[in-house]
Length: 458
Ligand code: PHE
Image (tube, rainbow, N blue to C red; front, top):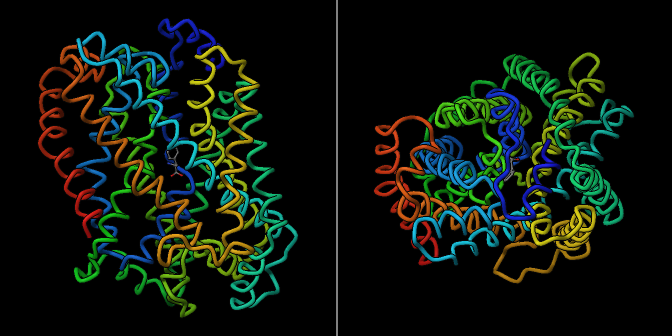
């Protein structure tokens, strides 16, 4: 369905295709939202920023920024029914405002480009772990050995690059062929299994000695951990995990059925998304505390803890393999959502879909090199203070570009667009619209400005 829709956009006319049902829309957006953000980055960030204090902030940002801006972003796509650049240009023109708002679509495209570049590298790590898991590699290893095997893997540029290439190839092939719909159906079928496996992991976590410590770490805030960095990370993560702030969901909104209430869909997705993060967090931190590991072990946290947990369970190799299959599927649907708007934007300039996919693929591959090599030959390259290339490659798009994109999207939706049009595209009645607009105007936008300015000054 989506392929045809994108072709239809080349003449700047509205897309006429719609998701087959309300449920299909929710499933597609959940597919974009649930990914590495929940299972890999959430525990990493929580571990690095003091645990419960971070979780608390993240939930506050999710409610005050993530959800209102998510509504704004999907609403713009639904009202414009075009690719981000065209939707923004049209809506601005119809409201008698500057056509230059189209540039925001381009900014979004650049953000997606940066995100996909490290996303593909880290998804590649999961491919390596899938193969290792199925070959029974971890079964005979001690927790220490599992930990050093991860470092050894990252230190090997060839293996990291091979997996990055493979994952990106898989993503761009699906986008080039326009068969994202098929993958989504598979995802739809298998995602409940990911939830089931996470429930199993939480059940296992319950039996470990670190379970209560993990709960305390996650749910009893130590307010002294609220550093400027924690605030900043929590804000970026709220956008990243919901897939908001880079126009990716605008593209999905363009196909939203006419009779669906947007707020209800968005809240459903957010609950499904947070549930995954919380379960992953409980499982991972239980292992951290029962093994006396440090919660702030960085981006390797998930990759080191889960093999330890599964090695402990009967049939562990298979379970671990299944986990990485499901994780890869979840990251695959997210990465397709990252790539699709970029390819659609080039397509709307008249470029053939396959060529757009190849160009973006090559560009993203090159852009992924700093992340991929940050742990080996370029580990000493630190252009800003202590930050590695990997830190930069994740911080810049997630913590800086997504919030800036989110701010502009929110501003466009609440101050620039015609009110009646926006209200209709949200589809939840005039009263809801006015409340939502008040929250965006007087809470979300000021909060975003304060945190962003605060960070740049600190
Ligand atoms: N939400 C995805 C995740 O948590 C990442 C993503 C961000 C996808 C932005 C699309 C757009 O893994």
